[in-house]
Image (cartoon, rainbow, N blue to C red; front, side, top):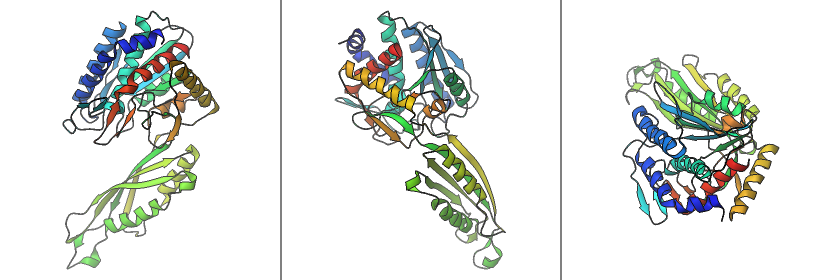
Length: 375
């Protein structure tokens, strides 16, 4: 067992305690005050564990972002994570059962945040001098809104980084790392018709809901599994009453693609679909929110290094391609080889059974520390 592994094993109770504390500081993306409270806990941990006062990038509507650098050298690696969650305060409670912890954001991705902090602390406490700059960026605007205010900062840091390491949740019960992610496009489409009495003046109305339904079918037909394209109309709203011809409707659309070029093509197709009823006007807003995180030859080399380090630590890791999005896509899009899924191992992200398996916390924190030291 290496000195790093021994240190982390010795401090496991503290690490688990930190995970539980951060999870209990609920931080739904839409609640800036709550996100910032979680952010203050992280800032204090950085000061106490690393002797660094981080920079706080203030935001008016979303949670503030936190960033700092450690180490010296010509090269830089970037560590990324978010501390906002999908859950509203009070939706879930923290429950600990043997080696499993349930709770809001425990795997997505507060365990990853804590693992980053403790991996850096382990290196510091073991007097390991870093021959590179390690840039750490924690954002509070990720879930549901796709990191609109933090994206430029992440991309700028990525452009100056040799590698990107993202502590999002690992995949599956054995914690596969993510070397590919689909690109994401999202749209809000509004339909403006004409209302009328459904009984007396049906023919005078122009149904926005009918047009939305026709448009929905056209959108769903763009799905092509062989080409790795999925189109999902996930939300629909409209109408004022059952006896009123609806003059307004709206649908919200999620598109996933395996290639950026196909995403651009789908974007053009969606925006070129015309109304089947010229009296119903259509407004389309939206587009790309996350590019494809490509698995390149450089990514293969990076994963191979990570796997070798894991083997030296006494365990194995696999890689996987996924359809979900992360800020790793922004990093990879800058040409920076990126390894994602370095956070907690468990399951249920965005589900009521969200959880981590604490048996993996030590090995994954050790792997992070080793990557930071040796890359």
